[in-house]
Image 1 (tube, rainbow, N blue to C red):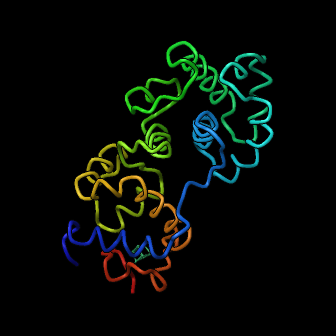
Image 2 (image 1 turned 45 degrees about the vertical axis):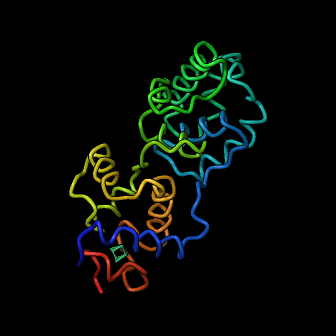
Length: 210
Ligand code: SF4
């Protein structure tokens, strides 16, 4: 197995050929919908969020709309995404800050995004990247698992994993790289039983079973 710096570009190129449709799975039509979808996707699947958001976004169109209803009503509207009390609180805090400090718009800078209540680094990275202002590498559960299996990091903490990845992944790939790992993780490198026998990375992966 070669050093990770030599393996990383072939890994990216092969995954890009394999998963040409690798993009964000959440459905949204504007910056606010993107931010809300990503916030709702914590601790649940994108599919689950996509079930809730069409009607949610018909009702809540501007940041003010999230503050105009009783909190119980908002909780009820997002209930199927789980942790609905926490998420409703975060959505109201965030939309209030958007109005008060950002002129009702979603900021682009990572350091501004992470100031929004309930917006952690991962959420901020996803939003910034989708808005065309990639400033980091998104590390979710798939990115963490695959980075470890591919021998790109020995760390377990997402912030440290991101730091390791930033050292080896060329900057122009920071936005697409997580999508490639996420889709590969969903389709091939499954958490419990990786399908190494059909994996295009088997000769580049120290964890390959074939
Ligand atoms: S070879 Fe196996 S462990 Fe390595 S990335 Fe592919 S599926 Fe995952």
